[in-house]
Length: 312
Image (cartoon, rainbow, N blue to C red; front, side, top):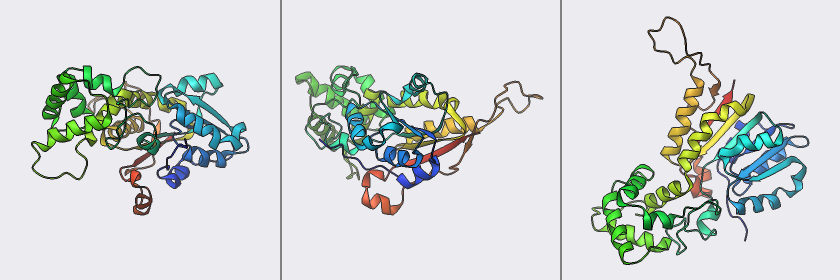
């Protein structure tokens, strides 16, 4: 089955990564390998593109797409948070560019069969890496009401958590909730009872996003990644991050600003004692968004935010 996905903001990513022959670039989230192919085409003949993805389908697809460049690629079935270990295995201390695309691929929504979409009737799985243990079904059927409310509110920014969770608890007491379509119906019915107006988005959108984030520990992994990423960039090496909702973007923005700031001692200190040095220069003072033309061709790009920083 083909891995269906269209890379977002490809021209902007290529420009900001500043790909040139001989460089070492890490694509931490291969997805459909669209970005990776554009990268490796720019760094040949003697560059190296390191590709990482926690989804085995993405790795299998990348091997096919990037086969003509086999001498210039190294692919790893792993989570992007483990990229320091991967670099160590390759004997590489630092690289010239790192790309992190946090978006959900079209393949996951339409062809993975793992229940990412509320429009399909699939097992309630939502794991990016099927080797991991926790499924969305486990959370929906076994987590207590308080825990579910916290997930939906914090990760989905859903304001109607109590009524949604009440309906879920009531339904699972009768029988286990097993499919994406079933959960979507429960959420939609719960919200419809109180809705005063029709929403622009499907009623289950935020709940599904929240469950996916929780199952894959997405925000936790992103925070860990951003804490140490600067240490693995060469001088003038660049970090490009594509995020798709406010929680992700907030983590990226705050960490980039932390690395751009020097001394953090209180203003009334006569002398710096923190010894914190500025290690980043932010190249996107305002977050970049896709063009209207791109969104018209690829609607999945509409919520994309690109931030870029350069190692000093």
